[in-house]
Image (tube, rainbow, N blue to C red; front, side):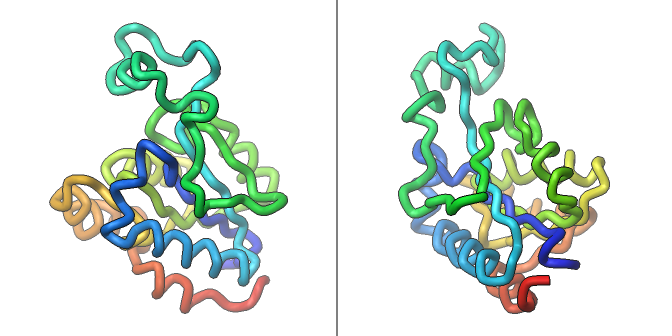
Length: 187
């Protein structure tokens, strides 16, 4: 795996989604992975839920997201990253419109523009954005790593089953520290 052809996807580390994952240490693991990626030349991409003004992407019968529309969540200022996640120059923040990081976003275009072939996934929630993104990326022939402790799900059993039984079929599953330790200098 070449660091120059790898991207760390930090997914849904935003207000209204990731606050509850702090106590589990997930936010800190993601921040440590962010620092390791930057130090080793791995591209960093932030992905978050973000709808346009007026929520044109959400129909009346759109499960889950119609509730966000009714509550005025994930649009404009209510779609911000957690304060610790500050993108540097050249690190895109991509708005997605559904669970998968690819859904209604420009993620695939960004990945292709930089010849990215390896994805490292961290996000909240494991059964939402991580599962959906992993499955879609697998079908698109990306090689993937999932940071087991860089992901969080409010249902610990769902997180555990996905990490132990489902994800290993399509990705390498390692801790954030293991992944960071395996990074060499940029290249």
